Length: 124
Image (tube, rainbow, N blue to C red; front, side, top):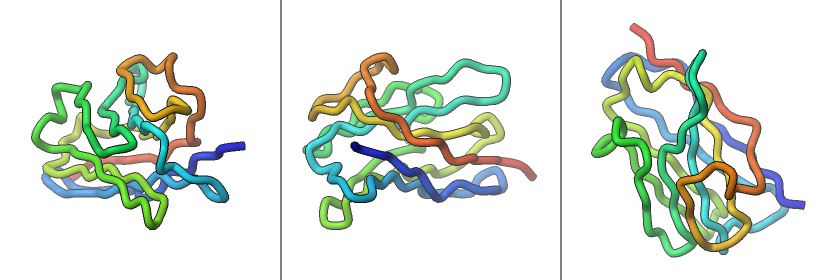
């Protein structure tokens, strides 16, 4: 059964960068669309972006446009979320998830498998 594991979260100052990783130990992500979501304290979970199996990226959170991007290393079976120019409002628990198919979606209900999340805290 596919299991997703996020890593790379941490504490960073405003303006800093982090790169999150999404891996699937014992499985392959190469044929899966992978979405990144986040949930800030007291707020609902929101979609950040999604990357298809071919690397096409759909941005869902306008607040991260031009600051966040995704990539995938199929040789390492890892999908990345690169976050630059981080702001206080980027603080939250970040999740990766897969639709179980090659496509992407902006609806969290379309994603079948979720990781446990990695905490990102932006603070001075």
